[in-house]
Length: 191
Image 1: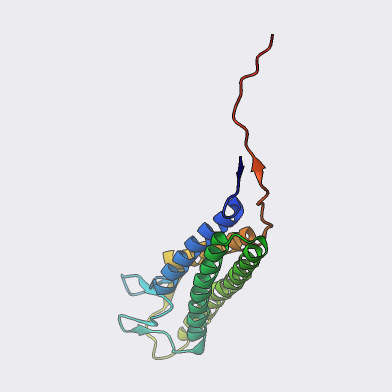
Image 2 (image 1 turned 180 degrees about the horizontal axis):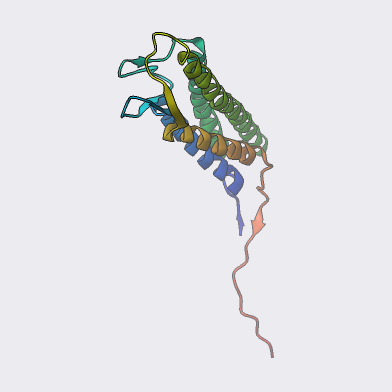
């Protein structure tokens, strides 16, 4: 009996990983807790994300780097959706050449998503640190920085990066769609 799978296990794993990466990217992009900041003379912790630069009257300067980070991660979300759809089409097609082309396209898109996500994850803390240190020299700024740490939403960004790299590798690896012959199990009689 001959049987074929719609895609190999690797490409199915690529589809699952791209779906998880997309969800993680959405969580990271809408979350407000990328950085947790504590100042001296205050008792509460203040969090900043991609969309807000003011919390409780404490504001970071409105600089272009935050818009760049937003744009990069939103583009990554859209491209991950496109890669997920390409992988889904690849799983549904029966032609080997077409199937392979869709999976390579999905892998290329996921590689680009990984690059965009990584750029955001590097740019945000570097520029945030620069802005928060710059605020310490501003005469109108009344709070002295105690500490700042990455928060849970930033962690989802790194989780998305890991799943994105995995998805791109799973999509790009060659298909294993050789037809296999399965024989019914027979007991061997020794006489």
